[in-house]
Image (cartoon, rainbow, N blue to C red; front, side, top):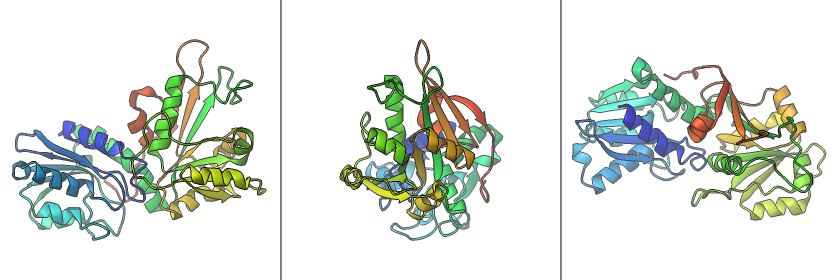
Length: 338
């Protein structure tokens, strides 16, 4: 069972940053011996959900009739939106067992587990099985940004802060960074996985940052990524705004950083990455607006050190894995979720 959830989580994580306003979801189909037949994930809003895609691929490959168990990182939806309900799609198959990572916090889409039980399916939750709780926590982490938007009306905020050996954020003259090549690639992986970038006007005026995904391939056919520039005094040059629009951003300006998580949530953003200077980071810390905080610290010798502080299960863990040291994590459980 664990290996199937591992693959479902891996597949879903690869599409973080492309699915908003929907959550990233993975699904694995197993035969009666526990062998993996198909693993699929939701790619983007408007496309097939993970379960529907897994069923379609199994049908195309002629293995659907062999499927007896479905593992889904999120409770199958039970409503008709841009696509039909996944609970109905599963109910019409010979699949007998449905394992659910976490319940759907969205009151509009919830109820899939009850519908499947009514249809005679055996429905189990990872949270109820102690041996499978690590996979439950990973499913919670995967859903964390979507859950926060749905339950609190705020985007999940990740901070990325790079400091040199002396703890300063100021790069040497003539350079815009002091981190190593692996850390630079990591930064672009984070941009790819998130739905929005947040920065400050000081950073814009000093560096004219590109903020695009370059060192790794970006998601294909994704819509404009949001860029929020915190600018209290209206100093944003129109030329920079136009440049960022041409680079594929939907540019928003906020005069008060407190409003940023709400503004982004209203635009359907699940997960935002903050890349900014000391002033804005200090304000975010003072106002306690962050959900997880990644510090990349230059070392006198050897590779950069990466430390992660998190208030709970974090999607950064799914993106970075063993590349980070968890400095502090306080376990928590989402309201209304198993």
